[in-house]
Image 1 (tube, one colour):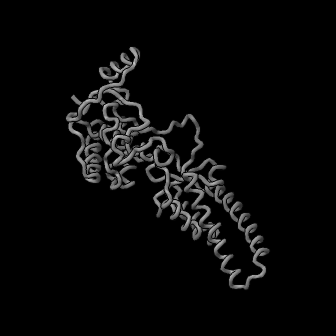
Image 2: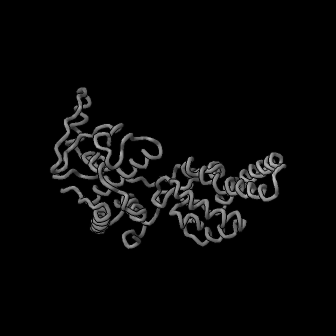
Image 3: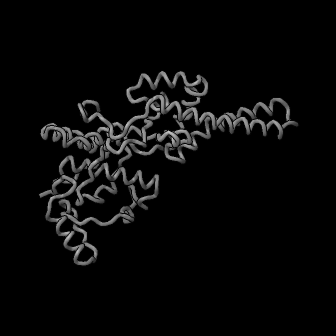
Length: 309
């Protein structure tokens, strides 16, 4: 995917965390974890004084793995990428494409973290982070994640993916996005945030190539008459909506196979329908909303994408 994104388009819309802030977060997490472990070990020693040495050793090993490996995995999964140390330092673990992590990401990071942080006293993790352009340790590389800073100066202005055209709202609710890899999502995000800064001809060719790859991964053709950039924006918006539903319950019933409930909780957007798609009658609203809807239907779109002719 590196051939599709060049120059400024490589820049992420988030700022990766560096070794000092990550090390401070890890130290806080380790202090808390070892404090809890020593407390539990002392309690177990008092409660299991009547057991033999083998049973006590088995319980000690189980508690060690549970508190130093299982607990960080559970915390990162439930907090969506923020442990106590990361919360104190303003950091968060996200996927390579900026989305929220899941259990499998936290599992890989936790298993690798026990080896490269706990067993090696952080030496391997520090070397890997210093060698990485984005400060990633081995656990991040294998899990496909990135630790980013949540607290940034307001003047820096984070790059925002432009919203899709209103007339594409809900058109991709039934699209199967499970086959699209994270690397392709990242390339699409980078293109959409930088497409206005690129030469129009170059931007058009990149959009076409990315759209072709998405069509190949999803197995469904793009809607007729929709520009490649608008198609990419609509697909990314649908993916972000599903992630928000899974993480925060923002859209009940969203996702493939949701049927009539796929757009529950989303306000209807009225605009020129796609070719071959029957228009949805607008809801009954007052005169002010009628004028606003007419302005949206006839005036230029605020998203920067023109409706199909």
